[in-house]
Image (cartoon, rainbow, N blue to C red; front, side):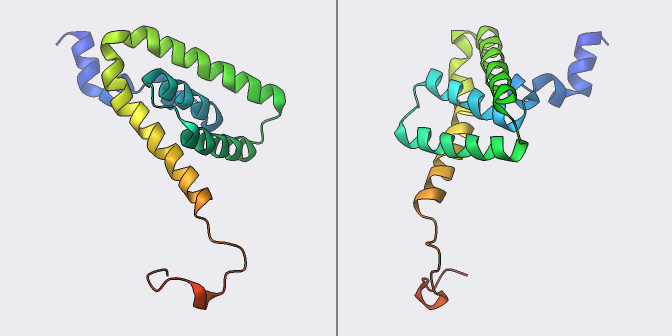
Length: 131
């Protein structure tokens, strides 16, 4: 069996994993923003969700300003490398995979913030279908 074919058959996840998967959460947040902008999906709702998600990822990682800057640079470099790798012919699949996943995650975060339960809401005021 040819070595490359054997590698593809034995480790498809490692071969198919993109640069996004290797980034820490805070950097992935900025990588996802780059993908969304490239795909033409960026809007104010996504921006709000991304801002919240990135702030939470940074706080969870405990990054100082310099480490956060380095993570943003790493995200930009990873995006540029993947853009060069995919070129225009791979745009559609990239937007359908990573772009779609990023958009859904940022929309979800924006909706969680918009419709969060007010502090101090009494249990008897919750809708019947709410646990």
